[in-house]
Length: 361
Image (tube, rainbow, N blue to C red; front, side, top):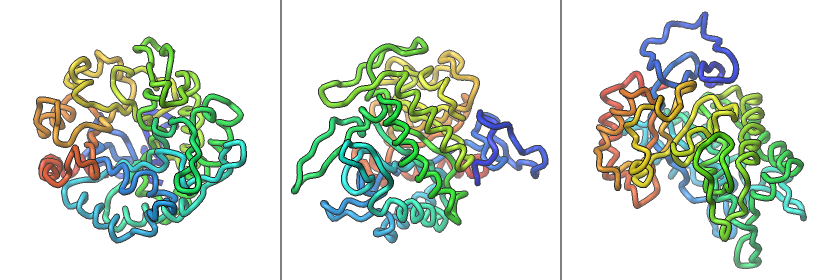
């Protein structure tokens, strides 16, 4: 697979006999013996929670049932300099995506999940873009609710992650089948990297294991878990994902204020997100050494494409990341109207045009 060699953690690099890298970005994530600045955008979803598995109650098709629309999106991204697309698989456990038993334990992938994963990779290949799949999100920790026949049954991840035995079922019946589906695709090389979970800190409570500020998730909305329990999800998922696909793994941390949270989770590169509320207290242009993140590449996995509340232009922000030794930049987002892609995509393209080799795996 494309991720079969990484110098950023996990297994040793296997690139000793490979052709010389024509334009290595030394701080980048190494994939398929290429060091690059991981550059692109968050697609996140075309239809939240339905892209992978479909949502029959809302008449929403998965990727395999809306190929033409998704391909048009991906081609537009590629035309504007995007190389890597961060794409969420299961932000919440509702609808058709996952099968559950009567006790709320996952028993396997449901709906059109398998077809949709394969279709996403096929379309990525057609559009000549690469994918970072994000398996889960903090949204999945919203409390369980059942509202048939007009609504949806929504299962919370919280009780699964908090219990080692139930977490093992999540890993074996959801994480492993996703990874094996990717590995089975003739276009598997388009899946460059994994992100276990998006912004897990919002679904956590209690002290940090490693000296970061405490986690203060909203217990009125979410089934919260401890740092130790979420770290176990990250480590156990990483082992399966890397074992099945050899692709590097990260965790999409909500903010660099929790910069140490995933440093012992067996990830291959770190990922942090940056918005105005973070930048006010944890500035993006502060050296990574001052945040204690120097042992592995660091990708800026989310930031506002329109630079809302950031008081800095896109070109300067991404240029600063590039010059400071970040390993990549993925702006938010194609489908979030608060951060419009259409009026900001020219800035994405402009940076890619300045660095046409270093930003392309």
